[in-house]
Length: 261
Image (cartoon, rainbow, N blue to C red; front, side, top):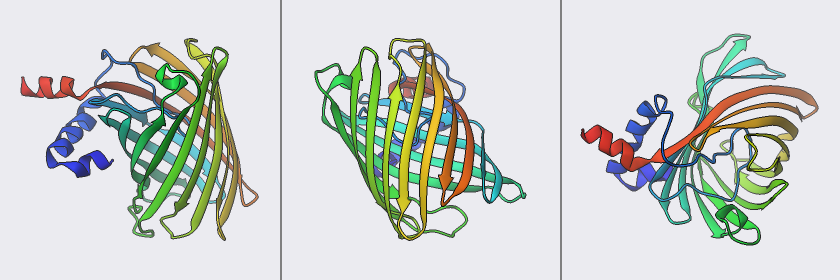
């Protein structure tokens, strides 16, 4: 995320977070990440808070074969009120036919809540923007890209809807448009059903229609587990994916305090 680029000190702290985070289970802040979706919500981490969305392993099957997705990671850091820095990436290993592991889908982004709303315990919809740099894949077959997205979220007693519209210049330097919607069950349910549909068109290259169904299980105020099953069609070819992971958050000051001791 861009938070690391802002200062060397912050970069070192976040590297420490990444190494320690897998061992953490209970912290005094609520987790609200957006696994297992491709889109996101119009909310950000609180100032000084780290939120980690982690998929230890998943399975993807498309026209090229079957791949292991391990890990898929998103690190969110609350930079200031209504501002969040995001660093994300995916490890992908072809299984059939076998191949070498590559790091893909990397991005360094900033998200800003433009209009506080129902996700911030206020009236009306929440509106946010997310923008930044798409990082090259580790296999050297792509370059830098850029993206800009708008997100609108509205929460009711019966559930929540998140609408996403994104435009991008991809790592292969094609124009890309993404339109998606996420639907969740009531936020106070311990286990809530979720779904997502999206359409993405990388102009002159690929068009994808995708649907996902799943559940999010709130273990505690600091830990959520999720599982999702996605079916898509890309240029008429089927894509099937199983996603499973967890989301948790904690104040960065807790890490600094433990390291200092």
